[in-house]
Amino acid sequence: MSNLTENRINRILDETAMTNALAAITNLETELPDGSLDDAQRDNFRAINVQNKVFTEDVMIEMENNGADILPPYLDISLLKNDFALFEQLDTLESRMVNAVRKIADLKRIAGHEAYSFALSVYKSYDAANQAGIPGAKESYERLSERFNGQGRVNEIEEETP
Image 1 (cartoon, rainbow, N blue to C red):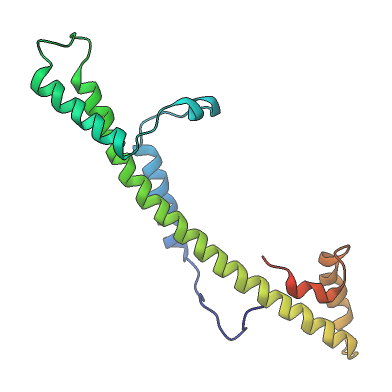
Image 2 (image 1 turned 60 degrees about the vertical axis):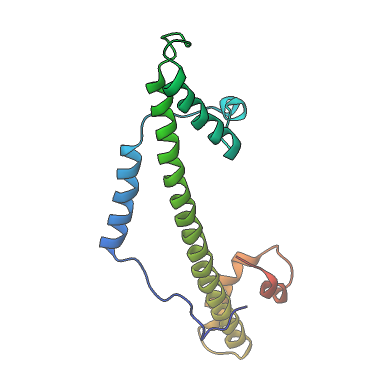
């Protein structure tokens, strides 16, 4: 259990911040081209790793320098350039989004840990007050203890993690 006096985050996103964050996500989704994959496509489509990226760049160079008289006209370099440019743009966005999602997940974990640990401490205080015969404590303790029905002894609550 965490120390109740150590509260790493004691802030909420105000309505404007939450609205702005959701609008930014919606805006990003709107700006992206249409397209999605089913599970089979996700398994079968080739990915670009570092070596494949270098190879693709080399092919574009060869096409520009020595493609006009060798390659058939249906191999349009603009298609390759556009796909590759989009790949690089999406790679940048994905990297930034992965960092943002990691930060959101970390903050969510901290806030959840602190809230649940605090709630468990309050629950234990109701339990202690109930055992001491404090008026009104029994009703609160019984309402809250329903969450732990069928989970073993009350002492095991400390070991539970969010």
